[in-house]
Picture 1 (cartoon, rainbow, N blue to C red):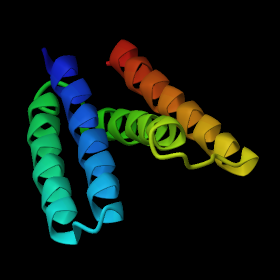
Picture 2: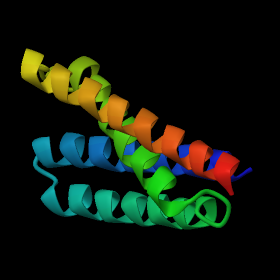
Picture 3: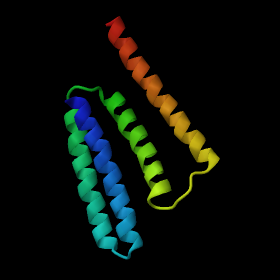
Picture 4: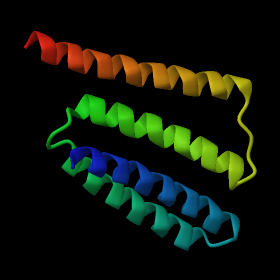
Length: 112
């Protein structure tokens, strides 16, 4: 169940960021800001639930990394933005970082 909460936190963050961009781009600065605040708040509630069972470092790496990737894909397909080759490399490096943190977490569990 804790992984469900973590995925829900990522989705809430992506929805909030995307809604903010749509609303602010349409001239609704206050509504966009409020949508982002509410969705980020929900994301943190889910993240808090997830960290009851998932170590904070692992949960945060997963949340930030997957959120960044999902926002990049969303901005590419829904917001008609572009991703440069350098940004693509950055996404890859972030994924590599998540993998290293995950590996370290399970490695630590094997030793303890």
